[in-house]
Structure formats: C-alpha cells, structure tokens
Length: 127
Image 1 (cartoon, rainbow, N blue to C red):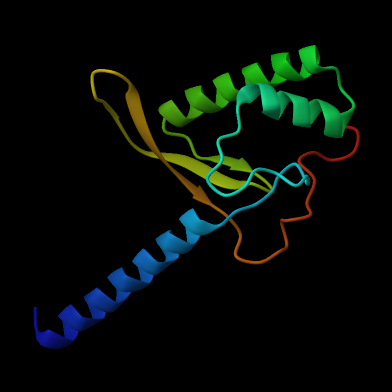
Image 2 (tube, rainbow, N blue to C red; image 1 turned 90 degrees about the vertical axis):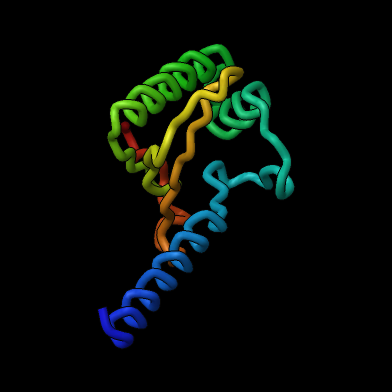
C-alpha cells in the first residue's frame, strides 16, 4: 500500500471514530421531563414512577409492560437484532462477555444528528 492509500484509509478511520464518539455522547430525554443530572443512575422504580406520571397509567400496569418490554429488548439484542426505537434511536449489541461475576454487554445507541426525532412520540395516537 503506498502513502496516498494509507492516508486515505487513516482519514476514513478517523471519520468513523468521530461519528462513533458523537453517537455515544448524544443525549435524548425520551420522557420529556427534566430527567436525571448527567451521570445519575435512574432506578427502575423511579423510571416506573415517571412513566406512570407522564402517561396517566397505573404504576402496576406500567411495571408489567416495562418488564415485558425490557425482557423482549434483551432477548432481541442477544439474538443479534438491531432495535429501532424512535425517538431514542437504534440500539444493537456490539460485544458480550462474562467476567465471572456478571455478564458485560457493550451496546451502541445511534441517534439522529438533528432534532427531527426529539419531539417524535414513542407511539402513534391509538397505539
């Protein structure tokens, strides 16, 4: 490979690396609420409370649906599927390993670069 080809390949690789960094830095508030501060962990109970409050659905019903949705998402990711969840984005499993104490999964979340999905509903009216 001559010097020109190597420089072009390096440029493409750097471009892909920048795009990956943008994907991982993107933050979207799906619920439309104030949401957590940067770096704060949102517990499932708090998530259920927010969903119930913003949707008007009983917490018990929200918990059942959320459990089913998270189980299905986990199964589909483990099967190698890519999951499209607008306005959140597209989610896929990059790699998975077991460290003896826990299963470690690396996921990629690809979001839209513009604001076109930021105000999109999770479901259409009547769904």
